[in-house]
Structures are given as C-alpha cells and as structure tokens.
Length: 338
Image 1: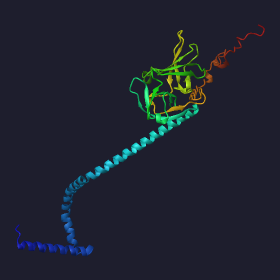
Image 2: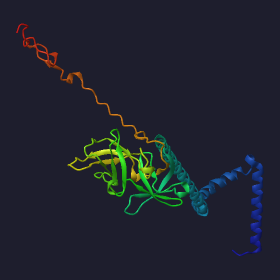
Image 3: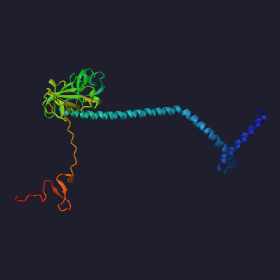
Image 4: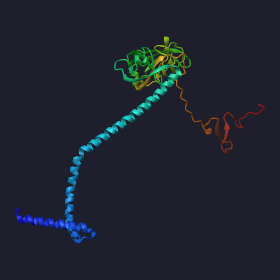
C-alpha cells in the first residue's frame, strides 16, 4: 500500500471516528447509544481475543518466570540456609542438654566420694598401640601427671602426659594398666589389669582381669570392685567403682586367683569426664558404688499346683477329696492299741 495523501486522510478520518465513538460510549455508560455495537464487537472479537490470550499467556508466564528465576533461587538459598541454621541450633541444644545431664551425674558421683574434680571433655582417641584418649584440660587448668580420671559411671584411667591445654589419659583397659583394687563387702584386695583393645568391642573378651592376692579368698559372679587407692593418692584415689565380676577362674594350686570383670564405664562412648585434682579426706569405701538392681518378683505358685494339696480318690469311688500331703487315709491309720 503506497503512502499517499489520500491514504493518510482516510487513516486520520478513521482515527477521529474511533476516538469520537470511544468518547460517546464512555460518557454514556450503561445507557450509551453504542451499547449495541459494543455487544456486536464483543461477540465478533471475543473468540479471537480468547484464542490469542491462550497462546500469548503461557509465553508471557514463561518469560516472567525466566525473568524472576534469579530471585526465586536466592529465596530458596536463603530458606535452605535458615533451615540449616535451625537444625544446627536444635542439634546444639540437644548436645548441651546431654552434656548437662552427664555433668550433673558426674558431679553427683564426685560428691558421694568426696573428690574435688575438674570437668573435661574427651576430644580425641589415641591412634597408637595404647588405649588412650585426649581431654581438653591441661596444666593451665591444674591438671598434673598421675591424676585419677573418672566418669559418672566409674573409673576411666589416669593422666600420663600433660600439655598447656590438653592431657593424655591412659585408659584402665590398656594392657600396661595395673590398678590396686578390692572386693565389695569382703574387702579382699587384688590387682586389676587391662586386656587391651580386643576387650572393648567383642562379646567373648572381657576388658579387665582381677587377680586376688589370696587364692583361697571367696569371690563370686556379681561382686563389684572399687579402687584400693595408691600411696599418696596418686595415680588412683580410693573408692572409685571399677566393674562387676562376670567370670571366675578356678584356682589350680596357684598363688593368686583370677576373675574377669565387666567395667561400669563404656570406654567406646566417653564424652564428659572429670580429673580428680584433690583426693577425698577419707576413704569412701563402697559409698560411690551404684545401687544394686532390685530382683524381679517371681509369680507365686497356685494352690492347685502345690505338692501339699493333691486330689485323691475316695475309697468308695466317690468324688475326689483333697488331703494335705503326709496325712493318711482312715483305712491305713494304725489302731491306737498297735
């Protein structure tokens, strides 16, 4: 179509007519004289508008989503970081609660024994041939070599090396560990020796051995053992629970007698421990031992199953009757004159 003067005049006239009709329709509102034309236009162009919208709208939504994608990713990253932070806070709260409970039990144990202790946390385990752990307390905190280390359950070991901020603890399970101990109740003394790493994980191995100095002294399964105490209270203070006798070897004429002991402490789960920085004023003896578990009640036998009450047949074939055991029937009782 050529751009001539006539064409421009026609377009201008059409534009003027369109603007005039729009103005009249807008001012007329619902009573507009062009309401009929508006309906006809909607009927004619409505389907075309809907078809074009169905094609254009998805494209527009896609373009809008593409344009907003960086913002959505930033929001997702922010929410993920927030969730991670909340999870870490919850984990820290649970750990703090657990450590608080361990520390409370540990202080209770120290209080019963009269030990002055310094709380510490196990931060690493030894990688060599020795059974050792490293704690986060050293000489700056007052820790010295050959101090007793315990947990809420009982004896852990003794300090062997000390640095400014950390210390190394030789566990009671180490093969070189030798601890003076005594039996609960009988007070018989002996030596507890470690069995090494083999005894920590296997069920057939027991980590500790207890050798009684008196081979004839009585010892039985279930007896508990505590530390005897060392000269000058180092490296071991008295009265710290060690473990429970699980098996006793029969003496074959030797000078000592050996028992195998299950320790109170779970050495593979050490966390909060305490270093005894001052010994008790007196030997606590068995005061630090945990209470013995109550025996489970056994159901009593019913009267019908008791041997003292059994049914017997009447001599005349009547109904059964019950007589206490040991009683005699009238036919078998001796006469008074016999």
